Image 1 (tube, one colour):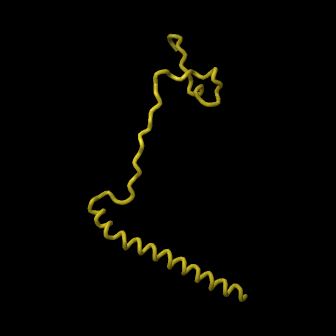
Image 2: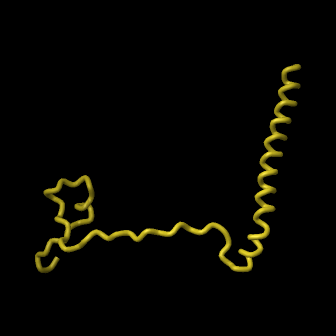
Image 3: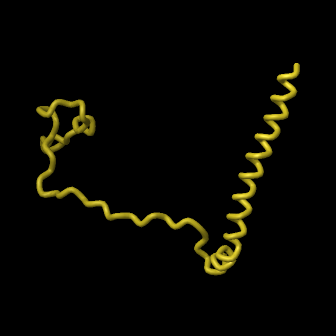
Length: 89
């Protein structure tokens, strides 16, 4: 190291090092404010796909709603049949 200037090590800035060994924080720098981020849009961004999605989305929501209900009732019915035969053994 030419010039005799001591460069602080990265390890000296960690939290576990006593304050006497830590180099002081640079003066004149203000902490940066993070800009508020907009929430990410869910769904397509292409205008053609958005138009198609606009018309198909209600049908998709009905399909998913019915699928979950029918699936749940089918699983409940199958579980009751299995339990019925299990109880008879």
